[in-house]
Image (cartoon, rainbow, N blue to C red; front, side, top):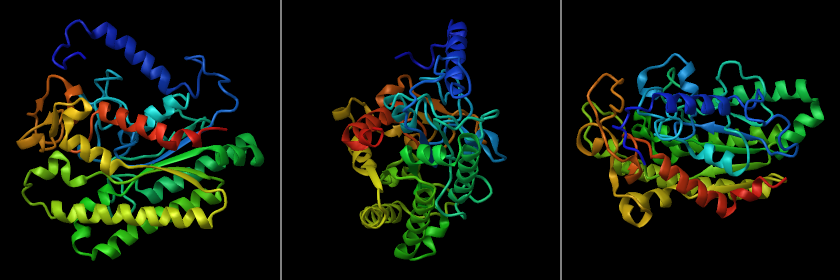
Length: 363
């Protein structure tokens, strides 16, 4: 893999890649990649959540740089330009779309997007299941639900009620939510059981909402070991959020309750199917034993500053211009102070697809 520092002579190549990636992003609306009429029996993919799944929705909202990633070196590995994804390249939904033989699923807020027949991505970096998590700076889950209702209405108008319902009932719905809720100062002022109950309650409400619109097939992820991200290894001045120990307790409780709720819903909702990615275990193994999975560094971020690269300065646009960038991103588990590298996402996606996610895409 090319080092980030080797930029000379890449301009024309990067421009070509940019055009290809740009084309791929708009493939749903155009014929630029020959996808017109592709797979009449395709399964659509609808994506909700936070920065683990955000393809660039936050590029188009009025927010601060803390909740955006639309500058280099973000996007450098695959797209060769920043897309707004909080990584050096692709995210889990991008790989899942590829494995399902779908085009890259675009951001809901992407200008000019009108065709949702392959699905759409509502995820927003920093979003939580609770409206109060980063309120006013992100697209929370409640708002993502409202956006989905608009898409559902548009599909009904375009395809007719029966065909729209068929598309939505065959579609797969992926969500990554909860992590931002447990970094919130609110988490320290409420009992753990009660607070996690609110988060899981809102997630359950989202499932029931999608189910009423025809959704039957869901992909969930357990929360990652959030206390292991580089940012949590650095003592942040003025931090009012929960400690690493508290975050771990909240995450473990969330994962236990999520499993219980999904088991319960499978009994109660006819036709409800789901696949769950064990992100907690898979990520923890790579942090603690990186060499076992082909990495050299499991605890320090490729891009950032301070101890472990834990200060969130990647790209120099978040108030501090200085930052360090590693020479070979493929050796790292973490790209920036909070988010994994494309290589980690690719490994996770393969594991999930082979485990049983693939079955949900079988028409």
